[in-house]
Length: 60
Image 1 (cartoon, rainbow, N blue to C red):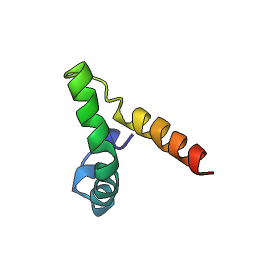
Image 2 (image 1 turned 60 degrees about the vertical axis):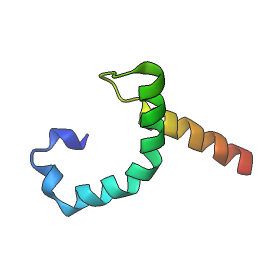
Image 3 (image 1 turned 180 degrees about the horizontal axis):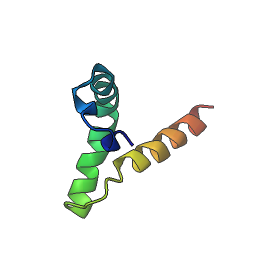
Image 4 (image 1 turned 180 degrees about the vertical axis):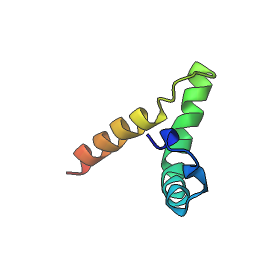
C-alpha cells in the first residue's frame, strides 16, 4: 500500500515499518526464492501471517 505514495521511502515512518517487518519477512522471502525462484508476486507476507497464526493457535 505504501508503494502508491510518492516519496514515502524517505520518511521515518517508512523506515520504522521496514525495521520492524524485515526480521519477520526475510526468512519467508528466502524460502520463497529457494522454492519458486524470482516471482513477481511476494508471498512472504502471506506465508508469515499463516505461520504466525498457526503458532498463535498452538500456544493458546
